[in-house]
Structures are given as C-alpha cells and as structure tokens.
Length: 515
Ligand code: KIV
Ligand code: ZN
Image 1 (spheres, rainbow, N blue to C red):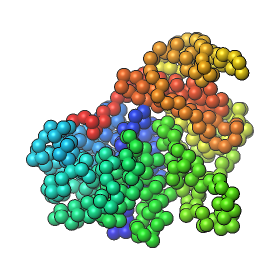
Image 2 (image 1 turned 90 degrees about the horizontal axis):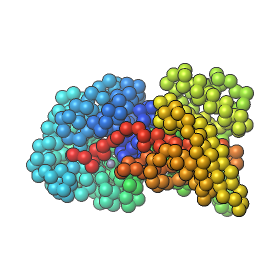
Image 3 (image 1 turned 180 degrees about the vertical axis):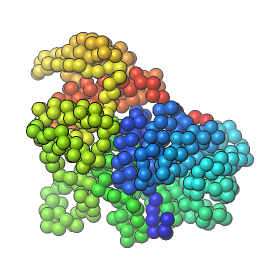
C-alpha cells in the first residue's frame, strides 16, 4: 500500500457483535458483509470462529462470497483457535488471521495468570503457527495502551520476526488521550527495529468519547496506516471508533491528513441503517454523519445561510454519505420484477427465489396499508423477513388491542409455539404493556425487559414504526426488532423476535473474557 493510503478495517461483526444483544445470525452477517464489500472496506473482520459453530459457519460463508475485501477472523493466541480461524477463512480470495494476547501487567497477572516471558513465547508461537498457513497475519497486544512500552517493544519485534504483517495497538478500555496515544505509536515505531516490515494499526474503544480522536492522532502523529472501526461505532460498553467518522474526517480534512481511503462514502448511510436494523441499536439523532439530524438545519439563521450558499454551514454534503430524500420507489401496483430490481439497486440480494416470493408477499401486504413505499421500507421489510425463520419457536398469528382515555388497555393475541396456536388476553398500563403481558402469559419466559424503543422508518405519520425490545435472561441479553405501520403490532413482533433469540441456542464466547 502506498504511503498516502489509510486501510479501513471493519470489526462490526466481531467487536461490534460483542455489545450486549447485538449477536447476528449467519444470514444477517452475510448481508452486512455484502454491504461492507460494496462500501469498499479493505478488511472485514467477520467474527471469532472458535467461539461457536454458528460463528465458524458465518465466517466461512463470508469468506466464500466476499471477493473485493480481505476477510479476517479473530483468534486467541493458541493453536486450536488459530486452526479454527484458518479452517473458516481459507476459502477466501484474500484472508487474514488476527491473533491477540494481553500484554499489560494487569491483564497478564489477573486475567491470563501468565508471566511476561510466557506471554512473549505464546505470542511468537501463535504468529508462527498462523504464518505457516496464511501470509497475512495481524497481531494485537491486548490492552496495549496500558502495557509497559519496553515489554511491548520486545513482543512486537519478536512477532514481526515471526512474520506478522500488521501490528495493531488496541486501546482496549478506552483509556488513551489523543496526543499521548499518537506519541506512543510514534515511539513504538521508532524503537522496534523491524517496524518497517509491518503496517501499524490502531483499535480504540470509546469509553471517554475519544476513540475517533485517538485513532486520528495515531495516524497523524504516530504514522499508523490502518484504523479498526465499526459502523455506527457499535461495540462493547461505549463502543468502538466509528467508521463513518474517521472516513469522513480524513476525506473532509484531506488538507490536514493528506491520506486517502478506498471507501465509497455513498454507501455509509445505507450500511449504517442496515446495521442498526439488524442489531436493534438505534443511531442517536445527533450522531455525526449518520444521525437523522446530521444534515438537518433547524435554526432559521442556518437555513437561510444554507439556502444562499451551502458551504456556510455544511462541510460535506448529505449526498456524499448516502443520504437521499425519501423517494417513493414502489407502490401497490408494482410487480415482482420491479420489486426485485429495486432490491438489487439498493444492494439487497436474497438467498433464494422462495425468499423473494415471501418478501414480495410482505411488500404487497405493506403496500395495502401504505400507499408509498420508500427504500427504507424495503430495507426494514427484508430485515424482518430474514429474521423470521420458518422453524422459529414463537410466531405471532394475530392480535388486537383496545385502549382509550379513562379505559384500561386490553390486548388479545394468538401466538403459535412450534406451530401450535395459543390464545391469551391481558390488561396493562398501556396498549404495549397489555400486549407484552398477553404474550408473556403464554411464553412464560420470565425475561427482564431492559429496553423498549420506537423509531419511525421514514417521515410522516403513515411511516412504519420500528421497535427494538431488549430482553435479559440468565445472563444472556438479546435484541428483537419488529416493524409495522401499527406500532403495537411492531412492538409485538419485536418482543416475539427477542423471545425467539432467547429460545435459540446461539451462544457466543467473548474472546477477551475467556482464556
Ligand atoms: O479491544 C481489544 O483489545 C480487542 C482486541 C482483541 C483487538 O478487541
Ligand atoms: Zn476491541
């Protein structure tokens, strides 16, 4: 890669997936991988193959379809994990094994219960093992920003000798501050004798809200040439570096950074929406670049300025990052061919003709309720369809509810449990509460409701409502998403979707919490 290029490494499907409730199915990951490839992300970290058979299969499926991006998999620094990674990734056109081990005194002592010499040895052996199968090997010293620089230099020199081609310094707990972190990267590159044999990368968490600033300081001051990031900044705790923010910062301030990425920025907003719909993590309205208000000028003074000359208050255009005015794309009379064509134009490919038929039927149902169908509606519809497996444990058959001023809200539902229909009724403090109580009286999940949120998919009162429900049970947290023009129905769908996730055996091991 020439000096002026910045590599964008997306870890939405690995680190992003570690956020509570954000776990994704294989099909959901495939949709996100295709969107990331369309966006021209350089490296897609597809998962942690040793965590479960499900994640192994998802990484393998992504490795088999993605052609224009490198596909990476995370592996702890042991032969078993790395072999799982190799087996999952080896079908890819370009692939990378990413292995890591903690190097801070705190992590080595309290988490790994290993001494520094053992960690050094393990790091070398792991990179050697990976390098035997794969030319492209990335090594990360976990908790790098809190590690002793002298020890870090020894480890990094040794793993580069073993063949690591990318050295990624994580700020695992979001502790770094920009100037100091940038300087740290610069000094490491200066002190490690073979540093020029590897690309230097950073991976920052956002606990103090400085992940993007730290990543950019590492680039500008430290000479890093890869940034690890996620769509919408998704990630554990306060999240990771936001892909959209670093990409647009580097592009908008090219005068300062003098670097280029390969990213097709017009894919940013559609991909942000897709990740938000699939994971149920809603984007805050004032979020830079992808928030609903990012390009909305509410103040009259600003609006006047923007109308006279856009540059007075805008440093980038909404179109540059893929915002489109809600365009009516289809309606009640649109046929299957037009429907399929529009899906293709917005980058949605379904797995089979049967999936297209089911999605088309849902589209017809929606068009009966809503005269104008927008791209956002199609995205929500396909996400719903993909999240509704035919073998799901719970299915909403029908429902109704009644509420009014001074009346106690009441809901009746019919749900099918593994195909057997069950009826229930309940009263509640509001129509949503009554509906959830009715479902729960049948499901008896005992799960705790952690979050309930509603968002409009498009503008106007006839918009579909998109609901996220987060449930927790026995230490597991899941998000369910549902969309409908009736927000009570959307709420019931979201609750059922969360129950189905709880019923599935999809267990994930967090690579950083396990040994
Ligand atoms: O935050 C971190 O340290 C990580 C590493 C595994 C790269 O995610
Ligand atoms: Zn991380």
